[in-house]
Amino acid sequence: MTRREFMQGMALAGVAAGMPLRGWTAEQPRFKTKLQKALIAPVADDATCERIAKAGFPGVELTKKDITLEDAQKGRAIAEKHGVKIHSFMAGWADFGNADAEARRRSIEDIKRLIRVTAAYGADAMLLVPCLRMGGTIPRPTQFKIVYDPATCQIKSVVEGDNAPFADYIATHNRASDLARAGVEELIPVAVENGVTIGLENVWNSMWVMPDFATAFVRLFKHDRVRAYLDLGNHVKYAPTEQWLRTMGPLIVRLHIKDFKIDRTKKNDGDFVPIGKGSVDWVSVRKVIDEVGYNGWVTIESGGYTDAEHSALMDRFFAGQGA
Image 1 (tube, rainbow, N blue to C red):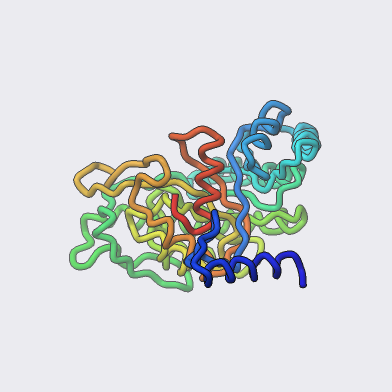
Image 2 (tube, rainbow, N blue to C red):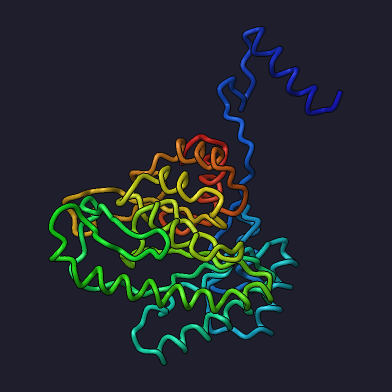
C-alpha cells in the first residue's frame, strides 16, 4: 500500500466513523486536469522573479516588447535561477488589419521578431491580438446574432433584421479579417522554426466577438502552431465563460483570468472588477475547464489584491472552491 492509498483509506474511515478531517470533505472536487498559476511582469529580472517565487507562483508571462534576444536569454537564466518558468510572451496588439500595406508589413515583421524573443525566453506560447479596434457603428453585446461563412469567416450579417446601420462595421471587419488571416499565415513558418505556438486573442477589438465565430477564425489556419488564448473574464458580456470554454475546447493554448461585472446600463455593459466580485461563476468555470480537458498555465491579469492574495485565490479556484 502506498502512502497516498493509506491516507485515502484513513480519510474514508474517518468519514465513516463520523469524524471530519481538517481540510477534507466528502464533496471535495476531484479534477483530472492540472493547472499552473502565473503572474504578468514586464521583464525577468532578479527582483521580479524573487517576488513571484516568494508569492508561490511557478510561472510568469512577460510583456516588454523593446527587448533583444540577448536580453531575453539573460532573463531566462535569471528566471530559472529562481525556479520560475517563463511560459508565455505577450506580443499583444498587432496591426495586421491595416489597409496600408507598409503599416501591415512593419507590424508583421515586428511580430516575427517577438516570436524569436519568445523562444529566447524559453517560452513556447505567444499571445497575439492580430488587429486593432474596429470603428463604425457596432452592435451592443446583446444584439449580436452573427451570420458568417465558416470557410472564410466573412460576415453576412451581425444582427437580426436590418443590418444597414452596421454596414461599415461589417465591411471593415471582413477586410481586416482577411488581412489578419494572411498576416498570421506568414508567421507560421517562423513559429514552427522557433517552437512557439501563436495564441490568438480578440480582446475588445470588436472582432470575432462570439465563441463560435472566434473559434472558426482560429480553425481557418488548420495548424497546431495557431491556437486560442482565452481570457476567462474578457468576453462574459457577450457569452458566459463556460460557453467560450466549451466552444474553443482543445484549441486553447493558454488562459488568462480576470473578472467582469455585467451592467447593461453602462457604456461598456459593465466594468472589470477584482476576481470573485464579478459575473463569472468560478466554481462552474473550473468544472468546465476539467470537462474540456485543459491542462496548463492560467495567468492572472487583474488587480485588487496583493501577490500573496492572488496566489491563495488561484489555489482556491484550482481546487474548485471558487474565487
